[in-house]
Length: 193
Image (cartoon, rainbow, N blue to C red; front, side, top):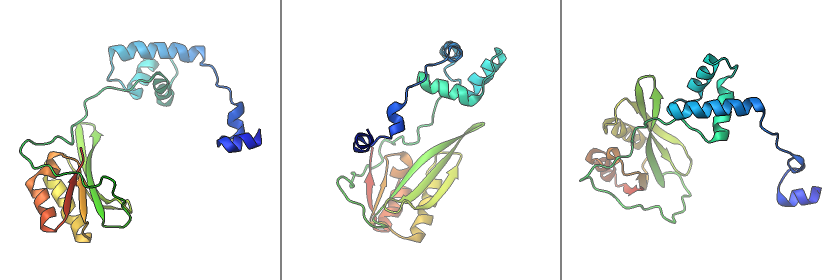
């Protein structure tokens, strides 16, 4: 058995593991979560846990989150579109197909993500070196304008210069201010979709 487990790459304890059946209490909670989720699909684990406590059940957020994962439920809410292309902006080809990235400053990349706040979102742009995964610069903004991306690029270019700069086709990266700065530094532009 030891040799077979080693050949298959599994632990011996995993071989003897028998899943535990879901308790009656958890089944009852899951039924309630399912009914409430159909009525309010925007409720996450926190709100569902608070709702269940108001119904007289002793639950915490972690338990509700685990049960939601078992059921395959996620809160539905509107997320910002951070990579919306702008008609008329030039789109560059993707240059990284089949390329092996082996050294620093060969390829840099940038992307924007959002951070949910109590009232809206903050947007974070990060520029990093693909080989070392080193974050060269980053900026936060409460709007999705191009300015904070250009500022992050200026800071990153003071630290070095890549051969290729890869982004998505979002309006911030296809705008003239961003692409012009890269072209002035002799950087090849690559865009993925």
